[in-house]
Length: 475
Length: 100
Image (tube, rainbow over all chains, first blue to last red; front, side, top):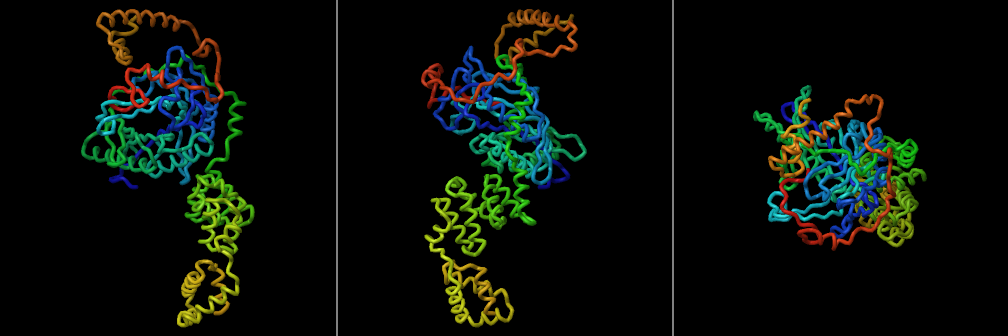
């Protein structure tokens, strides 16, 4: 997207991810979504007097894994209390990392080759969930609010990018790549809609080679679509204000997905004073080299490397094939494609089937072994199954399991015998003499006409390549 | 030595802590807190070059627990502590603005 009159947008993103632990950050209450309200609370996460927080080891390891994956320096860190008055935290403070975050100064490389710096990725606890009751259903106009503390104390890592993003697509790519990494390393389930991955965008505009403009922070971005729409809207809004001679004030704005616009949530009149101070109930975190090495050793191959490895199996991959590979990696279907490659099968065909048929039934993959996928692709490649038949067989295998040969047989996808195909072609030539003559005279387009007729006559059981071979032999 | 902190500093901190102080209290706390700060400033007169900052007297690090679920509280007595409850949740007065 191009901004008018030479304006440039500057975007930095803050991504909060809930960590996939069994328990909360400082207590043994379950970290589980969707339980009865206030059923996962204890004296620690309710902030009752005398309770003492103890750090979750697994949360620390996931935070370090995020740091490694984002090329950060993993450093000794401390915890602070961020004091504020809002009922989503019963303690009236949130424990977070302030001047010494566990991960600092990293970067993330995007598929388009650009690099976005990571300023920090720190640990903190999530807040409770507030529901605002009232006529409008929104914050403005609610008469009371209801609070569920099940989420209060759930471990989060907040990943703060540098102001390096220059357009909405790049912002989208950054979040998509980050989400893919977080899922791959087992840190997050990556569900933006459920709020386990939340994005705030800091947006400003300026003319190149001039200082950055005043930024606004956009909240309530619950999907990649919201993210790109909100950034674009906000940049254009700021340009309108500036070109009309106005100025931008630093504020927090709320994205309204239905109305497609941002509106002021609160103005930052002075630097917010959270009276940060060291959390006296927690000691410093200083992972030794052995602990870091263990986490690093447990880190799986990252999505970028997996994409490179799969693309290396393709000869001169097309854009569509690269997109297919991205889908394969995002949905963790690598093993299927690699299986076909190991069997010296058609990798491009494998990518297409995995990125479409397998992706469409991702939750039923347990029914389909790699070996059965490899066999089905081989049957399609050899012409034993047509493309339509292969898709049907995969659909059936994903739905009910079984082996490809039996499914093909049960579906009546027996290969047409050469004799039977030959007879059908012969009949159709006799029935369409004019078209046959034009084909014989060199009009190759007529091959498609005959293939269509054969497919219709055989209810799709014929193989296109076999039909062409038959036509050519009679030409 | 200049005043370690002003009446306005105390008023500001009181506001951040949601404390409503009378004028008399402001004056009294300004004096009392000032004495504490002066005492802390005594440390600044020591030569502490080469001494690492210490946040904790025990020198402990990495106190962690395994990621194992422990029983939570029964919600009923927890909610019974609250002035108002609706739908298994704590009901609070209308909130202006969003969480910081």
